[in-house]
Length: 332
Image 1: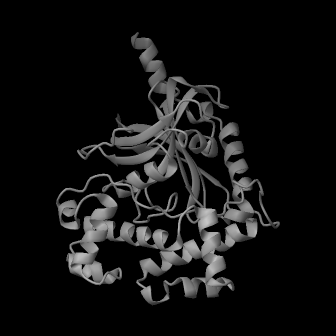
Image 2 (image 1 turned 30 degrees about the vertical axis):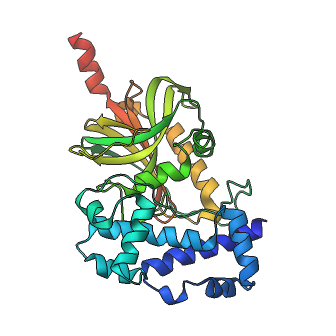
Image 3 (image 1 turned 90 degrees about the vertical axis):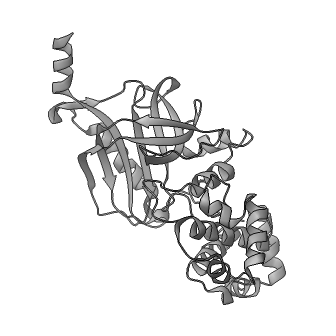
């Protein structure tokens, strides 16, 4: 089964690549099954078995996800967008778009609101299956540690008071109607103006979606010794006025100081666990007192976790300057 998980991931990656570069002529089950060396029947049966949906349905929904961002972010005509993504006419595109999102493309362009996009499937993950690293490759890049000031912004998110880590977070969320992985990630992917969005549609690879941890008296005691609530969401401009989905929270994050522990690009299958251990060690061993600061564990402070093997693995943790602590103590 693991082998087929990897094969389906090849198909999923190829689908997004072809859609992105408008290679519609090769986006056929015949081409993709031939690429794997299996019959169309066997490939489509395995695709549904692993992903839970028919190949043709996944392909249609992924194309529509790409078109929605074109409608939202570009000034192309609806006809140009329709033809670019393989629709036979403006009318055919409008019908498919409205059926998927409950609104016509023209109305959506005037009033973009959160809708559930079909995000890219991650069919194969070595760590999810408990396979760990392969090979003997180890990163030669060190951990960068630096301080930053993050301007005021908003954070739109869901949260879970009981979860412990990414996989546990989504296992628990998937039990809550309307807060499952596909619904939440699809909604967040459709929102315009995300501060960390690089234009991608896949999770953890440019879609602007990140894990976060909010210091919270109602939260779970974490390994770092304080109470926190795990969240998944997107950072938005401080003047964001868009619609907030009913199952989500929108909070204001004031301008503040943070410390960043960052590792550069790495090979996911060979290095993920090693990089994570290096980051954890660096955070545990950092001498905050020598840097004249301390972790800020006061309620409401937020820590962000950015994860993209092609770019970085980094934690952004809230801090407080020790001089400020002393000054505040003297004033009281």
